[in-house]
Amino acid sequence: MTKITQERAFYETLGKSYPADNSVTVNEVTIAGVKSYWFNEKLINQKHIIVYLHGGVYALGSINSYRAMISHLAKNLNLPIVYVEYSLAPEKPFPAAKNEIFSVYSALKKKYPEHTFTIMGDSAGGGLAITLVHDCIDSKIALPKSLALLSPWIDLKTKNNSYVTKQSVDPILSKDMLHYHALLYAPNSLKEADPSELKFKQFPPVFLLVGTDEVLNDDSKNFYNYIKPIQPKSKLKEFKYQKHVWLVSHIDSKESIEAMNDIKAFISAN
Image (cartoon, rainbow, N blue to C red; front, side, top):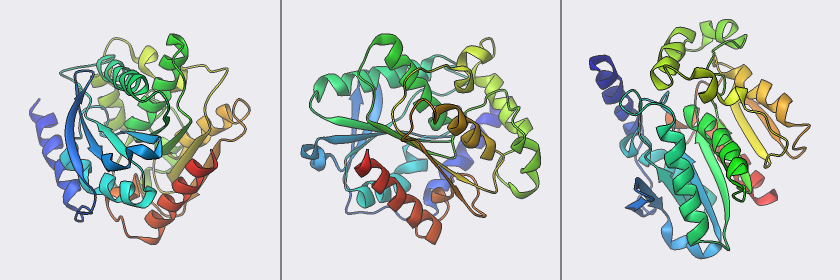
């Protein structure tokens, strides 16, 4: 746990890379027993809610890591966002996080039956978003209208080619580091927890955004190739020379602004 505690402390500092947008309100709430945060709750009358699932290899991440980035997303998209602070591994391994996320989504659907929902996620949160769709299908709960995934981690087996071919240009993630955290998350059920193992006959429109310079590059490409025949409105965009979840580091870079505008356009179109 000493290593995890140190990693969590470092991950919190990422939230200080730039200031939050202070024009966006942030309110802590409990939804279905899970600590969550409303950004821009006053915009609820727009009848469209974004549920945000954060990254952090299933073991890291909190509101402190993400408040700034989510505030700018909420401002740019002009929509309310619910940030879900799900339980982390290794204290709460699979299926704790996915079950909590499903409970939050179900509670929001019940409370706001006339609203549409977009699920956003980065890194591990992208994998959790895909898992949520599968859980909704299993439980016959209405699917979200769309998904927007930033640098999603989808292959918990860490077998994709880019884990090797992109390592020299990725200063953030490595195959060994990801494999270690995958086993922390699902020590006895890796295949069951792996989003890349899930099979679909239906899926909402999904937008996958990924940098060319990250080991997870093939996670997006492979999932896109799998899901495109099932959902023709799916979209993949690579951002040249960008690292893992580049919006966390520089929200005002050309590529970050482009990504936010692309997500806004995708949500509007779907």
